[in-house]
Structure formats: structure tokens, C-alpha cells
Length: 531
Image (cartoon, rainbow, N blue to C red; front, side, top):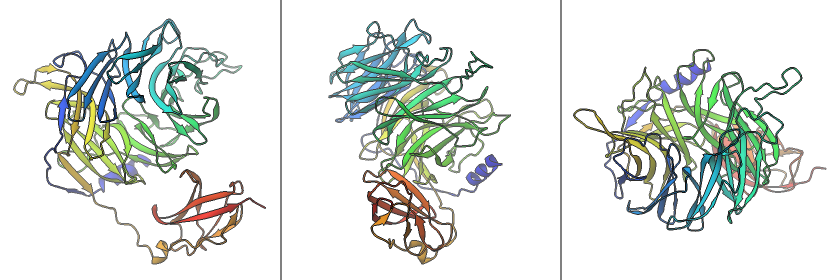
């Protein structure tokens, strides 16, 4: 039923098409990232990049024997290209001085057969420091890096050493390094899918894949990935830790309920929202519990309590404009825009039942802060006949940098000529679509009334008057601390009152009033200790 309702909502979307726009100034594409651009042996090289100080540093993050790194300026001119020291992959997520920190993997004699290798590259691409075997032999497959307070926190997969669970399936694993190249600590975390009890003392129930590490409240860390909760199904699993990686709490996160199969991965990402209200993640889901043939891409918001705030199934745009509700799509990375909205990369997912039609195009789907689809921008490659983007971001001039890999075929015969790694800066979309707003019930002037907080200051646990409530059921009050992090979300009564949490700490808070999901008023509130 849920699936039918969500599909119905997408079918009701009305689309307005704007004129075709030519590519803008600064547009360029490169297919010479890692060695021979005419090679047929570069598929599935998911190039990731880091933009800093007017240059783009790119690393090959999968399916390469050696790590490769290449630097371009914003005009597309190549500065240098270097090859790593026997490091498979070149995951680039974090800066180091004027260079970059890169993480990869190499073969090791441990339970998972791999260990991490870490490079510190200077501005010329030279490997200044490298840490890996034989210096350390930590069972760790890097997937994501967070740089915070002079530390590199590298998330990935491990063998569960030290957890008391048998190392027969992947566990969440976190490595902490400092800028001097010293291994500070490494932790592995209990896999909740492995059940060790008197009835099943050695039963291994599944795999746990850690894909994301982000900053969490109270100077903590959020570890987020997917875990095989049932025999075949995966579900999001989160661990919040302190800055030393010690667990504070764990939680299953279920955007589509207990029975849905939900995963994320290499091409997806998670961002921490600037206002501190939570996180947004992209992923895949299969909603029907038995016949799971369709892959649906989605984006979801999770608050700081790790509860799902909203989730949106991403549309599959077509060249004609209206979204195709029957097509499988591949969701990519999500970015927060300057206006507080979101943009999510989407490419068509080729299946036997639905071949990929727009092979040299990808889309950036625009969403409101509340997850409503506003439209999408379609970008086109002029050098590849097919592109598979893996990473992207906006530049300050609103142009887009995107990386991945492509295919080049003979236009007449269709013969495959090359499969190069691909980097592009695209100034303007080829096409732009705008989704018309869905009409909502009319709201009275009282719905948009300002805040008249009383008493001021107020005590924790006491009733707070905020003025007329207007239409019942439409109003929410949100309290944020001095850093913009949400500390409470309260429903407003018909009388225009809320009860402040008794555990609220004394101090100054921002108060935000929402009507029908839209911010309509702001104020400040001084909170005293509860009596």
C-alpha cells in the first residue's frame, strides 16, 4: 500500500519545461585521469575528487592495481599525475596542508584479506608519508574519511577482532590517524546481525557494511551503513560514538519500515545539515517483501536522535520531461544548496526490462528542505557516449564538477572504443525542468502570526505560550541551541501552547515556528532551570 501511494504521488507531479540552455563558460571534460585514455580496461573506476584552493585532486577509488592521483586547475589544465605505492584505490575525502590525504587497500594476511594503506600527498602529488603494511596490519577496508580537530577518522569494514564475535563476516571498523601519520587507535564494533547465545553459540547471521562517518553532537562521531538484519534483507544501522570512538548508542534506522530492503554504498553519501537539525542520506530500497525486482532510489532526512523525519522516492527523469515512475534509477550523492534545499544526483539504471536510454546524461534532482521534489537539471557529456558519475559538487559560480567513468563508441558501428575515467566541469545544464507546486489547503492569517513568547524567560518543564495557533494540526515549534542544533521539536496545541522539556538545560535558545512544514517565524527564548 505504501508503495502504491508513493508511486501515485509521483504520477501526479506536473512538469513545466524550460528552453534548452547551452553549456556555459568554463565547461570542459577530461578523459586522461589515470594512464591511457584509450584503454578498454578502466570500467568501474569510481574517481573521487577534492576541490581546494582552486584545484581539483582526483583519485581512483576502485578496481585499480595501483592508486592514481591527478590534479587539475579549474580551467581543466592538468598540473600533475602520480601513482601510489602498491595501493589499490585512492579514496580522497580530506585535505592535508596544501595536499590531500588518501586511503586505499592492499592484500594482507588477515581474516578479510585486506588492510588499509594511507598516503599523505603534498601540493605536487609527492607521497610524503605512507602508513600501511608492515608498519600496521589492521583488518580494514576504507570507505569514507572525516577530517576533524586534527584527526583523520577512516570508516570501513573490519573482521570484528576484539569484539568477541567470530571474524567470519564484516563488521563496522574505524581507524583514527593524526596529521603526523601516526595510528592513534582502531576500533571494531559488534555486528548486530551475528547472534551468539546459548542456542546458537557460533551462528553468523550476516554482514555489516560501514559507508559513512560524520560529525555528531557533543563532539561525537556518527557511523552509518547497512547491515544484513534478516537472512536476505538489509537495513540501515547507526552507531553514535564519542570522539575516541567509544559507542554512546546504537539504532536501527528504518525509512520504509521493518520489511523493506534498504542499502547505501560507494556511489551514495550522507551529509550533516548546516543548521544542525540532522543528516540526509541517499540509498536504494526494495519495498515489496517478496518480489523485489524494482530498485528505487531515495533520499531521507534523519534527525540528531536518529529518527526518520521524511523520505522521498527519487523520480527517474526522461528526455521529454515527466518523471518515469516505472524505471529503475541509480541515486548518487546528495549536496545541501546555499538556500537550504538539497540536490541529489540521479542516473538511469540499466536493467533487462528497462534499458538505459539517455546514456550520456545524468540529472541533479532539486528538493526543498522538507524533501519535496522541485525539479531537476539534466547535464550532458560531449566526449562520452555513456557516463556513470560517481562524485559531484557545486562550485561557487553554480557550475558542477563531476567525476566517474565513461564509454566511447563508434557512432556508426556502436563498437566500444574506450572506457576512460572521466572528469568534467559543466557550466550549465542541457535542460531544466520545474515541478509545479502541489496545491495545499488554504491557511488563515493566524497561521503566519509571529511568535509572542510568554513567559520570557521560561522554566524547563513549564508551559510556554507562543500566540494564536491558527489551523489545528499545522504547527510545530523547534528549539535549537547556539550552534543551530535541534534540541526539541514540539507540537503546538490548539490554544497556542507547548510544554518545554523538563530536561532542557538553562541557556539561550532559538525558537522556530513551522506551519505546514514551512518556517514562518523565529524568536529567541531564555530558559531557566526547572523548579
